[in-house]
Length: 388
Image 1 (cartoon, rainbow, N blue to C red):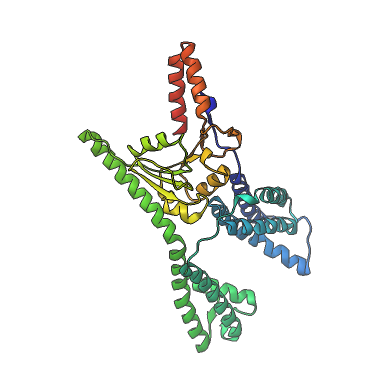
Image 2: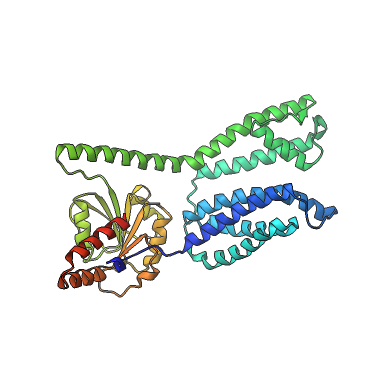
């Protein structure tokens, strides 16, 4: 019976994991470069590059962690950024001229090959609204304003002589860190510093709130719904009544999966996304006509806060694309059902669990004929435990 269920095969997630590995290696290499001396001492411009690479490699590593998160959600922008940062991390490893940089260079080269091979996995467009875009632009604006102003008024600051000094002063002032090693010595410089203190923290707070607020709201909504469902199920058990709590999103539909959907509807809230206008289900099922690879359609179905996703491969033209789209919107379990009479290669399906009804039927029939019903029952129980 175990052959009916197949674990998820690696796909876009391989790229996410290797980007994460490169990010951690870049951070570790950056720290190691600060503590060690280069194998080749250089001066001039190359020496300056070595000095910058000692700490900027760590910054690139943290930036790669952010892009890995975006790639996990399927964003194309995160993928493109990751490609650029992985190439930059490899360049950092070369410029640092240290033995500890060799693993970073090797990982970066391999990572670029993996990213190129998995390019088609990341197709989700960034869904930043006008407020979020404005917040990002305001951060850039404050940085440019602080740098240009500090450099222009450098004669009024003790400790600002170069553009790098101006960037440093802007960063520590706008973030309210204020080490005190750079301070204003004239009235004009003090007034400029005051403006930067007022603009910096306010802009940073607004940007963080606009970028991470929607994701936090979604997470809290799902957590609250699960807690309410748990309390409701306990009350239902105490009162002897059934309670519809879980939310299931079904992508694709045909006659073979209709009985499963109708049965699910008696125990959970079910939304079906299908391109067939004639698709019929029981009254408890919400049917949405649309393309299951389109972000707006999946969001209308509530996939971002659902408990599980059921993908009917027989009712879809490209099951792999649908599963990738679903996985970019939710961390919930994805189950693929391969019914419908069409031959499907279960080895290529990247769902968490793949159910092949034909194999299940064959195994159950053989077990019944050979008098091994108990074994079949145990296998079915084990399979159900695995799918959970």
